[in-house]
Structure formats: structure tokens, C-alpha cells
Length: 349
Image 1 (tube, one colour):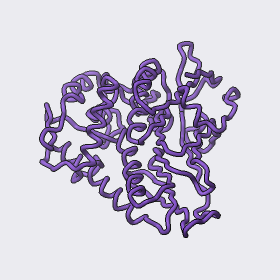
Image 2 (tube, rainbow, N blue to C red):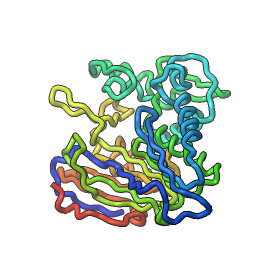
Image 3 (cartoon, rainbow, N blue to C red):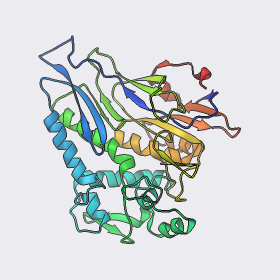
């Protein structure tokens, strides 16, 4: 495991993934194949999907994404997750079940630091799908009685809750899974080279049109809340993996002079105060990468490193605060294989 120091003392932002998309047509055509780039908006975020094929498959991609949206979009009352939250009888589909089961697995691995039932806390702090309420210790304590991954389960194909007030929000895992769903679609069509990016989470297979692994740029942390000024800190080269990031860098708000992070500790009900400012996770699938990137934010460096060692194929890159207040970064030994370039961060300010 590698540790490094960053000289910046005022970092409030973390990593922003920049996908390097080049021209849509390849100069190395084979069998009438071209590289196509599809983009648009889904799940209240943007997507960019690039792949090598003999025609555009955007229609098929949108159909898959809309099916996913109908299953796991908590903002839609008639979605499956919406009906689950409103205690309306509904037949669960495979998309919901897969996300639910992976969520339970990650919750157990992280000792509850990842918990899709923490939706009431997320809403209370203004990051969910309902309006923010005034937060008081009494309200947080009252919510704890109907928050907890061990209070909800699937039995005989239906959701069973210990308390009807239990709400779930899979936003910390579902974007990653949506990348995997599109990736599976492309693979089933015989597409070998592609990159699927949805809301900053990315799944990659094969190579780009130059025959190289896909390149991903990660921003240097800055104090620029507008995200107008960006410098790359590292560049990753990835062929057959998925990447997800989580960090207290853009999704936050300030109320009465206090900054509230979007990372909520599901065990305390309050914004996380752990030492990790942001995490990039590489895994075999994006659903796994997405979930653990979120969980690590609430776990802190020491516990995150311990858990990461138990997940085959998982690699991490952390920005964190040392006990003396210095900001530093570390990455797992095997993460280094994906580094193709690195900006000198000793001059960060």
C-alpha cells in the first residue's frame, strides 16, 4: 500500500472522472466496424457510451436504461422501488433483486456502513428524493428505529419490512449497476470494445479505436466549487474493469455557515466525519465498485483497507486527512498497474 502527502491545506473537493472520448470514427476500420458515441440523460444524470460496432445501437441502449429506470428510480412513484417505499404490492424484477442482494452483501461486509435503508437520514439532510426537513438530534434518534439493512428482506419474491416506515434508496449502487446492464447488453450483441459511463461511474471492456486500453483522467483536488478550473492528478489505463468514485467534493450544501457532506453515516444518521475525503475504486463490475466507493467514505482509512483486502479484484485510491491535519493520498499496491501518468502533486495548493 502506497502513502503520499499532499501539501494542500484547504481541500474540500475530491475527484472528478473525465472520460477521454476521441472521434466517433476509427481510422483502423475492420469488417465495416466503426466506433460510435452515444450520449444523453437518464436517472437525472448524463451518460456517454462508446463502442465498436457496425451500426448505432442507441435505441437498444435507451430501452435497457428505461427499463432500469422503471425498476430502480426512487423519484418515480410507479417504479418498483417507489412502490416498495410506499408499501404498494409489487412484483420484484431481476434488476431490483440483483441490486438488493448486492446491497445486503456489501452491508454485511462493511458492518452496516453501507445501508440502502438510510434513505430517511439522506432525506433529512437534503440529499434524497424528498424535501429537506429541519434536522434535530431527536428526529435522527427517532429515525433509527426504522433504519437498518437487517430490518428488510426478500421472502418468496416480495419485500418484507420489519417496519412499514422503512424506505430504501439505491442511488449509491444503482448507477454502477446500470453501467453493468448496458455492458451486458453490448456483450450479448457481440460487441467486444466499449466504454459505458453513467453519472461518473464507468465500465470498460476491450480497447479504444487506437487499440489501447481506455484512458480515465482523475482531477486534482481543488477549492473550486464551480468545477471550472481542473487539473489532472492521475491518468488511468483500463481495459476490462469498472471504476467508481465517491467524495465530498461537489455534492454538499452550506447552511448557516456549516458545510454538510452528502455522505451520511447510516449508523449515526449524521454526515460522515471520517478521514477519507474521497475514494476511487476499481473492481470487476461497476455495481461492486460503486457500492464500496460509497461505503469507504463512511468507514475511514483503517477499516476500508481491511475490508478491501477481502474483496477479490478490488483496488482503491484514497484522499484522506492525517491526524496532524495534513491531506495525503494512498493506493493499494495493485492499483499502481493502472497508472499511466501522474501529475506532480507536491505543488498542490
